[in-house]
Length: 180
Image 1 (cartoon, rainbow, N blue to C red):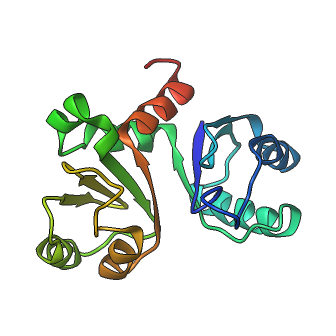
Image 2: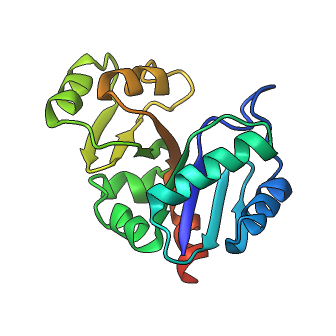
């Protein structure tokens, strides 16, 4: 099983993607049992021997040509996704405030120095930690008014990403494993 996260879709008038269309796109590419979660661009599917990087390229090209949507896809295996959950450096927040705990899938792993510089630049009470191609953000005062935006994060870390709150992270795990 694989999880594909689309970046910046259905957030406004641009990059509109219907989830039925996304499932049809995946099925047309030969991806098995495509399922979507929410309207924010979460796709779960079975695939053959293709690597996550190959699947990202395949999905990005197909979305551009068939859906007229230019966006990044971030593909992880079900095993990688379980490892992301197991590596969560904010277990208390995962239980007490999962809507304000965010995991960001990244195209490339940021350097330790970049993560430390981002943490030092934060003006509020937000906290960032990273492991490999994933960053974790705790937003104790909420996300909506925070100055720690995706634009700020991507610039500081030197890579593109897409974020999901902890509730969505767990729902995606359940879709790939059959367990909550």
